[in-house]
Image 1: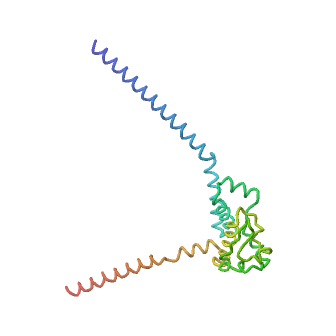
Image 2: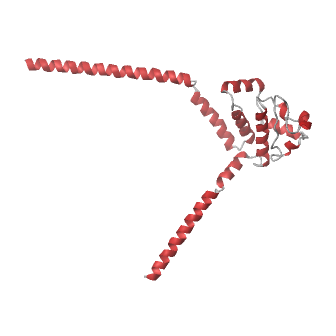
Image 3: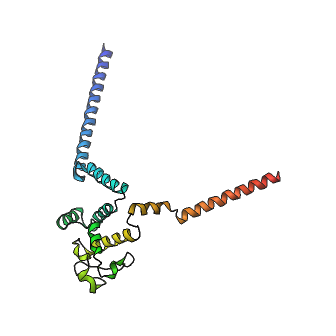
Amino acid sequence: MVTDAHTVQREIRSKADKEQGLLADRSALDHATRLIHRVCCLAGPADFIDEVRAENRTLRTAINRHDTPGLFDWLMAGLSYQGVSDRVASHYMDQHGRISWHEIESALANKPSCPKLQGYWNFHGCRYHKTSRICSEPDHIDHCPLPTHDLRNGRLNQTAYSLYLFIRDIAGNDLVDWIQGQLSVPSASAIGRQEQQRTHVQHRVAVCHRNQRRY
């Protein structure tokens, strides 16, 4: 009977220990859940993933359609966030608008007199500065379209026109096709590796032929 009583006591203690362990595990899990939820709330909105998917869907559509104006506008919006917080950049664009492909296309259709705007290679060294309203061609600035776009600083104006001229003059107005063409051209290092592999194979074939003739 004493043995049976001890056995019952051990089973009771074992059960109590297990229940205490389960409670401890549940408490730790609850704490971890609260902590992760708090971090996620601080890191971003609950619909962040949906927003990213929606933006990527728009970008993929523009790429599939070779929509150069759409891609240009997307790139310039992203570049506008450089150098300041996202909140400041977003607020400025909400207040002053964003530059678009069609705006630059329309501005250049008016044949501005500045020699820097005649092509991509000419545009180098524009040096437009928004605050002081100076550039490398001061005699033409009164009729220059760059200052008409109220971007956050002059570097963004230069970036927009430089990117537009690059796509127009170098990429033939099809940025997707140009990028695909660049990716399809083997690099010098890849060509070098292929040549080394070809030479190695030719050497091995020659060795095999010599060995066959020898035996």
